Image (cartoon, one colour):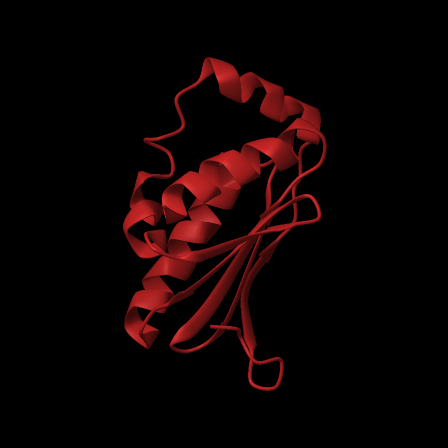
Length: 116
């Protein structure tokens, strides 16, 4: 389920505002609660490794997509060493989560697990 480049809407584009090295502190924290609300939307998503992180492709209706976009914005505030990019041509959606250094590995681990 690929998002067509023709009718894609960019809903969230929040670059990292903190260095990726800060993601090294993730090992000391349990982030499962911070990303808990995203889990139900991403369960079963198609997951692919990209440069610096992960891309998840999934389907959401328009109303759920609006809610999901707000959740992604909140996660970007809570996890400032990740860049979040949400694109959609409903019902097709794509979420890219990237970072540098330790943040790239953390993004892959956290979000790949959510898609499983």
